Image (cartoon, rainbow, N blue to C red; front, side):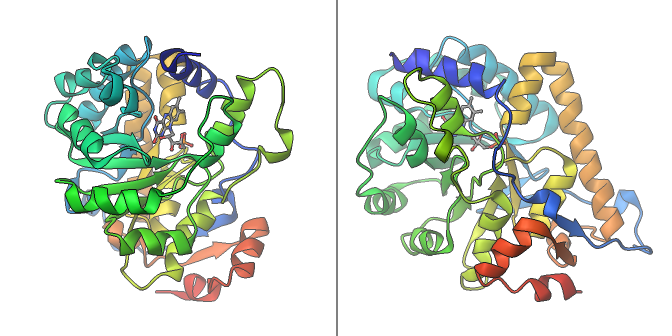
Length: 352
Ligand SMILES: Cc1cc2nc3c(=O)[nH]c(=O)nc-3n(C[C@H](O)[C@H](O)[C@H](O)COP(=O)(O)O)c2cc1C
């Protein structure tokens, strides 16, 4: 099957398949209420920064597409959403565009409709540093996402089977990149050990891409008629757990973008309180655009960001950085898994 046809199938399946079966864990986390926040809504700022890039708000419209017949229009709409909402955005993998000059217009359209916004390029971890440089140049990108998608490749019949040498390649990219490098999982999460190695080789920012949202194993399994892969559809590290893996690193060692099943302003607030500096959302925005159009998607983004501001007020946090001091309570399976992994949940519950 052609790369272009596969990308189009990802969009169509990604917009209809439900998240899961693993839960992101956000339902197992509560933020402590503050009955006297001593703030007005006007005092609450949702501005943030990642790898030195100033963001008007913490929501990044995460990598979805490029390179298929559906992509030009979709990227035009995503670029318009990012420009109108002040969100940063990423494009989908530019691998085909860089290697084979395929559908370059489906990426270039982004800068036409979002000329001054923060835009992330996106390439596979197997691409050479020179290819990554061309991906950044194609978009005049502000940062480069390098995606990790081993589980997806394994389920894809035409997928890669050799994943050796990624860390060395990422190190070479970091040494040659003119923009910050973001290493990003695509729905299976990143453990503390791998985060530490990525930071050691020069990665400034990690998008932990946990399980519980869009499930690429399920998308690839749905494209196959010979095998269902039921046994491994729940593979991966749930989003809440993979965000907290950063706590096992040296203090301040990493900056994190949280993604994987972020569906509301409440999820955003929890992800930021867990330690992320920004959040990524892909599947929810894709579904809104395809089901209800550009206007509804823009309203949804604005309304979830407003909910985030209201929740910050309810926790007494006037800045995103202050959310990181709000006490967090854990329950259920997430509590059990975090305890098994040795996370100090009492400190998180008793802070401030
Ligand atoms: C249709 C579709 C295509 C995607 N393509 C890419 C891609 O090319 N590169 C990438 O890094 N992530 C890609 N992703 C993954 C998302 O950026 C994100 O990591 C993942 O969907 C989890 O976030 P979510 O639960 O908010 O959807 C894609 C997601 C969807 C829904």
